[in-house]
Length: 198
Length: 288
Ligand code: SF4
Ligand code: SF4
Image 1 (cartoon, chains in turn cyan, brown):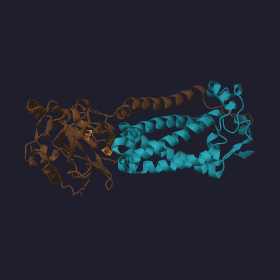
Image 2 (tube, rainbow over the protein chains, first blue to last red):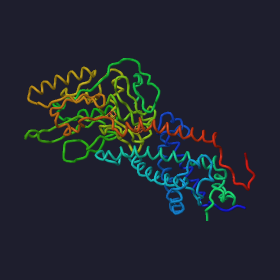
Image 3 (cartoon, rainbow over the protein chains, first blue to last red):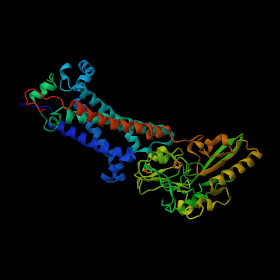
Image 4 (cartoon, each protein chain N blue to C red):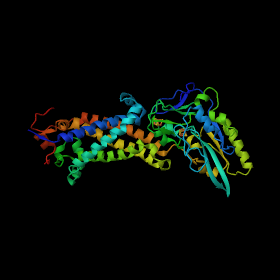
């Protein structure tokens, strides 16, 4: 017996966000560190990734804004989530029975959503400045300096979230990945991981 | 652009050691702003030698050719009409890349070999490796590199590396009619500048100074100014250095980030080995 967790539209948006983020991550790593420059060669060379990175960035931010519109109510942090967050050690060591029951999304999933949402906004704002550096007059160069720092900082924060998200979704919680591909989960899965859902 | 007979001392975005081992003379320009007559012969010589297309001049109330350097105008005489001690003063300075010993453009550049520093101190952009990101424009404390929007590459003065590497002096120096521009080894040029400053001081210019800012390790352009207390009037920053944001970003933040990302992946791996996946719901047959 399966039930729908993610609609077709939600899945399309999720995977668009995922793929654009991965492209941004790979090309960003190439810009970030000389040791990662080989990625530039794999993806068409420096000038090519310089051209597409900001364009993909716009697409990524668009998907994040869509998710915000669709999911922000589900993602609102409640007292329950704060209580749940206190038991994070039990969650990490798979002693889920010690945790308060959660709804459609647990506190960790909600936190990840907000990290990516605010991270995306910061990356957009700083990225636009880096994209058009020459448009920022020399007298306002502190804006350029703020942008390089903000872009790296936001990048690192979202990468941390991304690593946890991918690891949890594919390896730790069985059924998480198929929920996002087929959109369906079993009733038992829903009851087991998200007892208060609906 | 291709000073192929010169060894490299620094290479942008390359973490292995640069190959330069030869101990060659570090070269420098000498610019005496006090004997510059503002004839702009150096501007023309630069355009001509480098085959740069003519720029349409802009009239903005001074004799200055353009408000700023452009991707195809690398050598600009800046004119500043001002008052010094109640008397009218007309300050001119030849502006171009300063060829910093510690170049901020190179520190900021993410593209391997797009910016290089030769053992003789010349800082040069290799447009074939440039990706047009503009980070060098953020890293340079002198606002020198300029982005050409059509080619998406950045350009600036090469210190005529093609001439210098075959034993010629830069085109601007060659063209200067007053001798206010000279070219030679850095110690020679510094010596010349100090002599000139001493003479200026004798003649009543108490604030005369040699501009060779230590914050960027000194520059490959030694400038003599009569009014060292008014550097801003010459368009010179008082104490330039690589911007703190660029240093933070390229050093501590990068290493913190590298460690963080590696740690993230390692911790995920260790977590899996220790705890594995979450137990499946009861109703399905349990795997392990
Ligand atoms: S624009 Fe500047 S920083 Fe970017 S690759 Fe070209 S030379 Fe390097
Ligand atoms: S003046 Fe600017 S472009 Fe020239 S070497 Fe220094 S940092 Fe680089």
